[in-house]
Each structure stands twice: as structure tokens, then as C-alpha cells.
Length: 299
Image (cartoon, rainbow, N blue to C red; front, side, top):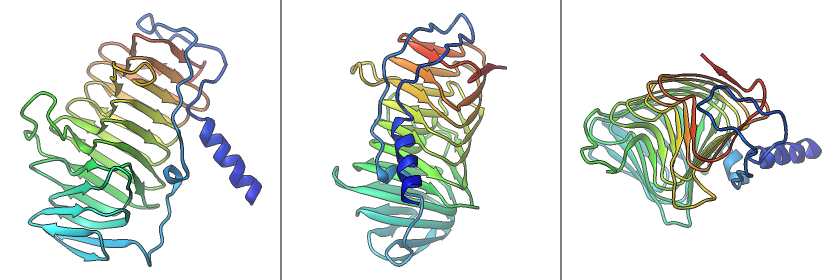
């Protein structure tokens, strides 16, 4: 059992790095060449998809109220505030929003255990400060996040996604999540966005998945019903950031602009299976693009 676990961790640690192999150019709008290594640090925390019910704070959502069993969370009007490091299990239906504000050295584990969160005035979940937050989709559960259509009034204003984080965000688990980004992006972070596993369905008025520093997809099933850009990373100030790496999973992207957009590099390798229908470019990147044969199909 120990050997199997070690092998699994090694596979995850290598999932976002360059892999040699045949390069397939899906169309003339993708500049394909040998890409630089696009690395992100994967930690044990990214892989945690279980929790201790005795130590976790359980939050039962009910309309505009919530029953909170444990420390670190409080309800103010229709806003659930989480301000301490720990594990929080959310279940039930909530007409409001979840705000996470931790110290920059602290992490939080949010478990969506059959949670429906509908917010009219801001993001459904807004992480304003943390070292990293992992969102786990509990096995066998269906979860829904939706936001209002008009709360972002200025360009660049935050939050600008239905599930928004100013810091690193990881999604994992064996459940499903439907995201309705009615105002702007579906899932977005100012730093690194990582999807380890899970079944995601996303509709967004702008970008479906956006990580300013990077978007790294290791596995899972991702269906983008409608959006502007499907996957986007746009950090132009750091040559080691602004990339998209897809090394596994099944993706179906339906976009009114670009399918995948990045600044410094795009890799689609390994066991990834990506289908893209884009009105503009399938892959839009000024940097090197590596796409292994059979990993990308243009619809």
C-alpha cells in the first residue's frame, strides 16, 4: 500500500511538467514549438479530499441562515464568514455568499457536501486572503454555485468570478460542481488555479476558468457550456507565470472567443482529452505551445 501511495504522489508531482512526445498542431492559429517546462508545486494539501468529522466545522445552510457546529465561522446577515485555518463542511442551500479571509500563512479546506450557494450581490464564494484554499467536492454529491449578473461595475474590480480567490485555489474530489458565472468569470484566481479531480460544469459570461499566474489541470471532467474564453492565464509581468498546463482529464470547451489563451506557454500532454469549439482561436498563445498527438480535437 505504501508503494502505491508513493507512486501516486510521484505521478502527481510530475503532472504539470514538460513531457516529450509528438507535437500536434490543431490549426494554424496555434504557434507550436518545443515548450519550456511549466512547473507548479503540488503539495499533499492539494490532494486532501477526505476530512475528520470530529475536528471539522460543519455548516448546515438553510435559506439565509446557517447552523454552525464548530469554530472559525460566523453568520452576519446573509454572509457566512470564515476567518480561521481549518476544515469546513458546507451542506444545504444558502441564499447568500461565503467570504474566506485568513492570514497569508494560513490554509483552509472547504468541503462542498451537497451545497447550493446562490448570491445576487457578489461572488458565491470569495477568498480574499489565504496561503491556499482547497475546495473538495464530496463523493456522490451535486453542488451548485451562482452569482448575480451586475455586481462587477468597473473593469478589474474584484471579485470577478462566481468562485473567486485572490490566492492559490485547488479543486479536487469525486463529486460534481455546477458554476454559473453570470457577472464575469466562472472560476477565477489572481494566483494559481489547479484542478486535481472532480466533475465541473461551467457557464460564464466571460472566462470559464481563469488563473492569473497559471491554470493546471491534472484530471477530472470539465464541461464548459458557454463562455468567452474557455481557459485563460494572463500574467504578463513574470516569465515563469501566465501558462496553461493540461496533463489529464476530459475537457469539452464551447467558447465564443478563444478556447485556451495564455501568455507564456500552453501544454496539453499525457492522458488529456480536450475538445474545443471556439469562434476565434482554438489556442491563443504568444509563447511556445506543445500539444501531444491525440490530446486535442477541434469541433
